[in-house]
Every structure is written in C-alpha cells, then in structure tokens.
Amino acid sequence: MWLRIEPRPEPSRLMRYLSPLLAVALMLICGMVLFKVLGKSPVEGFKVFFLQPMADRYSVAELFLKATPLMLCAVGLSVGFRGNVWNIGAEGQLLVGALAGGGLALHFPNSQSPFLLPAMFMAGALGGMLWAAIPAWLRTRFNANEILTSLMLVYVAELMVSWLVHGPWKDPDGFNFPQTRMFQSKAILPVLVEGTRVNAALVVALGALVVGWIFMNRSFLGYQMKVSGQAERAGRYAGFSARRTVWLGMLIGGCCAGLAGVSEVAGPIGQITEHISPGYGFAAMIVAFVGRLEPVGIFFASLLMALLYMGGEQAQQYLGLPYSISKVFQGLLLFFLLGSDVFIHFRLRLDRGRK
Image (cartoon, rainbow, N blue to C red; front, side, top):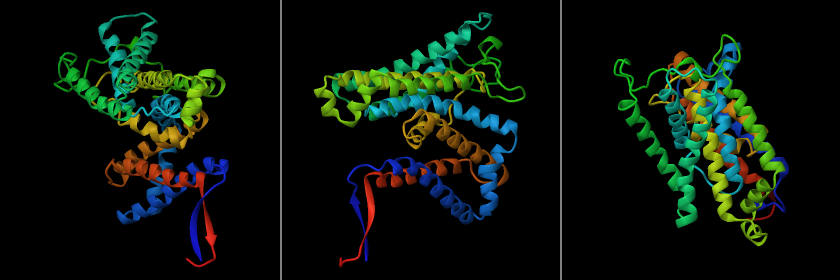
C-alpha cells in the first residue's frame, strides 16, 4: 500500500479554514517537544508561554495592546495580497509613519489643540503611503519586483530612525540614550481601560478591520483586485487596470502600516526610539495568511501572534530561555501553515496497488 498525493477536482473550502487550526495544533505539539529538548517541563512551558500571558485583566489588556499594530498592518497587507501585490516592506512603512506622526508631536511640543492626535495619524498614514509609493512606482514604471524593493526599503527606514534619534531629534536631557523627548499629553493616546495600557489605537484597528471587510467584500475596487489576483488574464480581458491594482495594494498597505507606527509612538512608547517595533511589520504577513486574508480571521490571528510575543517575554523571565524563542514559534506557525495549505488543492489517497 502506498500513500500518494493527487490534485483535488476543486479547492477544498473545508481545508481552507481547517488549515490554520491544524497549523496551530502542530505548532503547539512541536513547541512541547522543543521545551523538552531545552530541558524544561513541557507542561510548565505550555503554562508559562500560553496561559500565563492571559492570567489577569492587565495581561489580557497587554494582549490587545500588542495585537493592535498587527491588526492594522495585516489588514492593509491583505488587500494587496488579494490582488497579487506582494508588499513585504510593512515594517519600513510602519517606521516612516511613526517618524511622520511623531515628528509632528515634536514640532509642536506645547500644543494644546485637540486636533494634534488626528493630525499625527494623518501624517503617519501619509508617511507610510509615501514609503510604499516608491516600490509601487518602481513596479509600474520599470517592472521592478516589489518584493525586493519594499524589503530593501525597510533597512533604509531603520537607518533613518537610527540617524534621527542619534542626531537631530536626540533628547539633550536623555542621558545620551538614542531617543527623542517624551511627547506631551495632547500627543498621547487616551487609555481605554483604567489601570492598563490598552489605548484608543485599538478602536482605530477595529475600525480598519471593518473598513477592510467592506472594501474587500462589498466594493467594486475590491472585486477588481480579487479578480486581478486570482486570474490576471481575466482581469485584463475585463478591462481592470493592473497598474491601479499595484498602486492600491501598496498604498493601502502603507497607510495601515503608517497608522500602526503612530499607534506605537503615541501609545505605549510615548516617544521615538531605535526600537519602535519588534518586527510587527514582518509578523503581520503571518497574521494575514493565518487569518485567510479575511478581517475576522485577522482579528483572531493577531491575538495569537500577540500571545507568541508575550509568551516569549514570559519564557525569558520565568524559564530562563532567550526571547528569540517567540520567533521560533512564529516560524513554526508559518512552516506548518504552508505545509497544511498544500491540502487545499491536493489530497492524500491510499493506493493499494503495486508501486
């Protein structure tokens, strides 16, 4: 008897939604083995990594705090991914958005205007869109691969942040730390739940999910992008513009990533530092695919990814493991998701005949 893989007559709708759950289950099993290999109790490791971060109200609030930028980045990326536009530079767009919005707060250090925060979010969105427009223009003008150009621009953005916090924007009273002055109160997002750090950026993220769902599932432009992504020739035959698809996919992704950057510097950080993001822009790609490029799925996938970030912190503190173990779990999740997605288009068949 032999097991063989054969194509399905049509993609499996069940496996499309079962695949992320299977990937999560395999990640947990492999994680238990990993804890055992590292000399830790698998039960204790599971408790510290996955249960302890949700032990009380403050911890749950921190979960939503970390999930907020992931939601924003992932919903923006999903729009482009549906149109076969591969924006890999959300991390750089997040950083430029943080610089644009944070720079506005630094430029008006004594402003008491209630419009300062909305202006910061607008500046952040425009900054992210400007950074995303560079690979969009290179793609439509010179047919340059947006995967490479958007990824390389991440490192340019990181160096720009480093130069500013070590140079022109460095806090003269900051004991030589690479950081700006703290933002004044009008430039800080209000807290939603007293005694926690979860702030109004969560409302912005939830609003972005709703708008993203409407755009992707109820708008003609969203339909055009979906058709162009799934059947490029059919899109061209119908008269849908490939250039417009590229620009929309990149600019929407940049806009959402820029908003995520402002939500960090105007939220839990309260200033611009060298470490604005622990890699939210890259992790958001995993969130988008675990969530099946759907806003509802992205909401739950972002909470799972936030749990992995918090689990890494807990494992470092209570198990003596390096914080990078959270990256290992993220990689396992992506690895098993890609493996499980094979069975959307293929299935295993038991062949009782000879080889």
